[in-house]
Length: 399
Ligand code: CTP
Image (tube, rainbow, N blue to C red; front, top):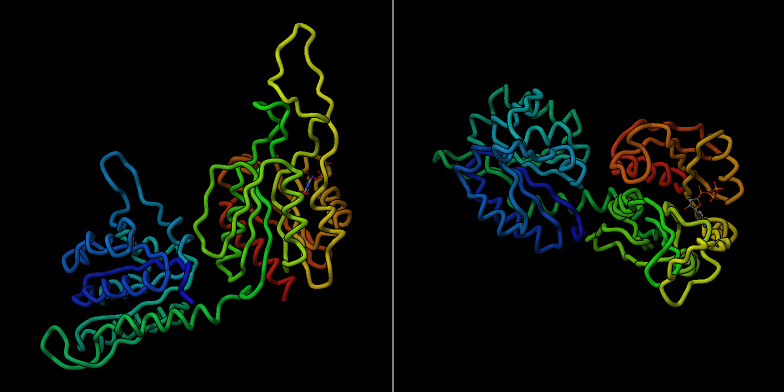
């Protein structure tokens, strides 16, 4: 249940921080990917070295890393995480979370995270009972955060009462039940095409394009996050994915992508076709490197297979296809035509007019068009955030 899950663990200044080491160990053992963010006070109780060793990831400590001005991107961190677990959550951090304070990396991440937040308070019994703390906890719960109740027992103060942080095993159980209930695409299979295709001219040259593959990889990651098993057919990119539910098939040419996509499509519930497939390929690939001549060179191009159109023809009841359109004029009308012609259920219209959108950028600006819903405009934002919107729309279609 936790295999491949991305757990961001926030540790604050409480003696219960020693239990966080055990929690990290159990999470890693269960197959989760764990990153730890600590407040300055937490470092008084447990060392980052212990946690980086157990989590196999550098521990995140400061908003600004060093004098060079390098900073930790708390927004990216929040987007990376499937859940953010703050354990132990001290009275001070609970109060700051409830009131929107933001004076360390953990709090900045909390404020920008979109994933589910869990918090496991740990403090002395009177601090916990205090009406301010109780009001803060209530406020956090009403904002949608999940409380992992502190338990009864002996406390560091020597007193006995409520205030002990829940045991790591209990926290793990809470996460397991959360994930089993929050995976709308659990048991579904998805196919994603991504990146460019390269069409060989001779052994060293090709016709290609500037597609980075970032959009397709982000979609594959998001589909996997929502529980789907993903086959990602990718053209040449520098990108990698480590999600255990993503199987990557590397191809080079449109013909290879076509073969892989048509082979796997009958077994999947949905396909997202984000690859920038070359429409044409050289009629012949020269077996030797073409030498330059004074006469110039003409290369005859022939049409590549249209993968999207072929999958659209193969589509059966219960299967859904999302396609992309890149248009420079009559954008909406052309995208709608493409939606029908290729038998898509949803088309993502990329606008090249906006700076920061499209190929190579980390951001994009799109419109989602389907035959059944009004057009949904999504303003300029990161490709990961666009992927979340696309997968949400696809999940709604599939519901
Ligand atoms: N596509 C595909 N195979 C191709 C060409 C395109 O699978 N040979 C897919 C793309 O991945 C995208 C959609 O079809 O999801 C639209 O691609 P686009 O290039 O914008 O449309 P074309 O049909 O090629 O039309 P045109 O280039 O004339 O706009």
